[in-house]
Image (cartoon, rainbow, N blue to C red):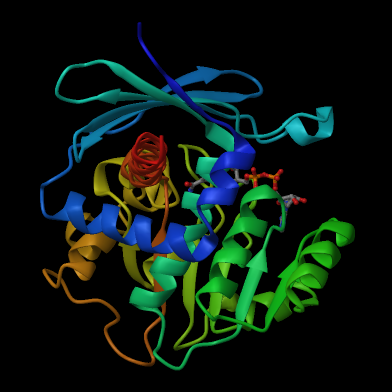
Length: 314
Ligand SMILES: NC(=O)c1ccc[n+]([C@@H]2O[C@H](COP(=O)([O-])OP(=O)(O)OC[C@H]3O[C@@H](n4cnc5c(N)ncnc54)[C@H](O)[C@@H]3O)[C@@H](O)[C@H]2O)c1
């Protein structure tokens, strides 16, 4: 008989706090950068006019996962989530199915966590204030993770004032204007990517920007010229150059491979991070399957520990 664990939303959010998600995602980036974990680029299946599906495989630490996930940015107007799907977790040695995990909870935690990891690696050491541009599902988790990493107080901006107000109230931060959010030390953008929210006029020496919303070709949260003026970092070059915030800048010839550093290389010490206190750092997150793998690994290990504890107590 095959036993497949089911990790639902409540189980995942109970098991993995924002602080733990940050450590897990940090570990995943390092193991991938060291070549210990494998991850082919994600594959997109367009579903016009509403969005796309992505198939995201990764293997490491004895597990192999496939994340089947949507981005339907305008679903909230229909009362549906932007992100939906499932993560299949298999044993990488035998191929046996081990678990199915709720995609929304894993995605929310690992996406939020990467905003905190990028800030820890790339922002100025004394950076504290956090601006959130776009306070929907993933903007809120980015804010929770930044707060867990001791960033804040922050300014939450969203064209929907209720969303900004509710997130600010939860964290004891303030709701404010776009300009106020962009004036913070660490700015995290998590909009649908329909229009640039970061322009050349928004840039200030010393700021750090994490761009999370533009995770497919055709989406952008920053003007190409603004990107070209920053010290640019990404989660993974193949994905970022074809399906992220950097795509338009690469296509326009404004940035090239040598202009962009992968975050994992900074974390392993193989590449320099922030060039100086006055630099403007910009991190493009397209979302990596290794981030999902890092969280699934913790869920599977927790569950194995609980099973052993039950066996011992009998
Ligand atoms: N990088 C990643 O790993 C990753 C992971 C998950 C989702 N995403 C992407 O993030 C984006 C947001 O996803 P979500 O699930 O949080 O969506 P959501 O609908 O829950 O939230 C989006 C928020 O952005 C706000 N918004 C819209 N236009 C804005 C603007 N011009 N300025 C500021 N705020 C604006 C909306 O009012 C809404 O509150 C999507 O494009 C999604 O594909 C990226």
